[in-house]
Length: 361
Image (cartoon, rainbow, N blue to C red; front, top):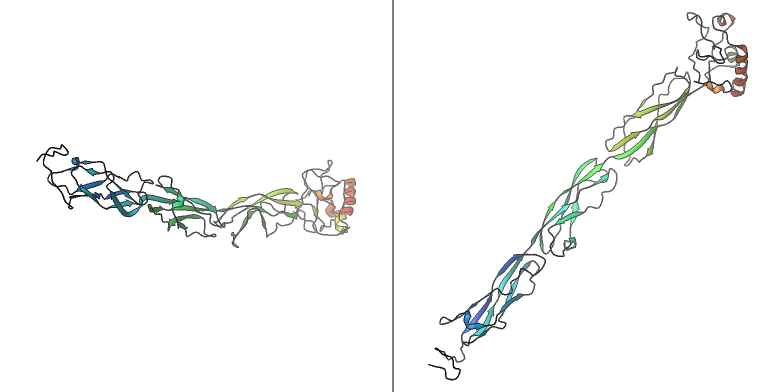
């Protein structure tokens, strides 16, 4: 029948109170967290309920869908909205919901490798975050902890730093370990100064001082060895001696040379001995005079001839430049077997001996 009221041609149904209904159903959506809502499709829906070959072409306007949170990971309802949809054929509209699933994005937390010195407290551990999206920072992760088997006094070496315990609403977290390197504790050491008289034996006990660095945890460093290449005939002077041998692997060692001084002085004896055998030196002369060098090496003095020495550049005004052998008495017979010593030099030396060795003179 023709419609003489509206002027529309074709066949038309006349509906009472039961007009057909089109259902707008929100489509299910699934995507991975991106940091914003750009992946949500607000036009994702379908229409059902057409009759007698009707289709969406018989509609005007558009519907839409929405959800309470289209950004953060989780599952929630998508609600349909008929919006501006209208039917020229008299359809009514209803809606049905869908499901929005936002999956967590992948986030890797890798412990940063670091180092410390043996005996120091462990440093504060940190991590590098790979996979943060949008404006997210590391603050979105809560509960992150780090573990390591290393303690303050763990031995020098490498130890794993393992992150764990972190959670984040929008991220599936995986972790990677870092390395804590414990380095040796540096020490600079020097043998303590030693002084002995010419002709004496070297001491048997030596010690050292730590100049830079500290020993922690009451650690034992091992037994030091000392190189002392001097004999009781080594000339008067100041020398260097060395040490090494400390073996605790948690320390590194820098050794400085120690001072070893060989000085002149009376080794033993009394006034009579000093006067009868005032001084002996090397065959280098003092003011051109050779000082009491044995001529007949086969003769043995009546007392043991002790080793003797003299400073490299002796000064008669400095008795400490000489070593005096005071346990030897030489009578006139023995004296004939030694080169003569200039009397003036001998007397000059004796005067200084009196002043310097008051306890002997």
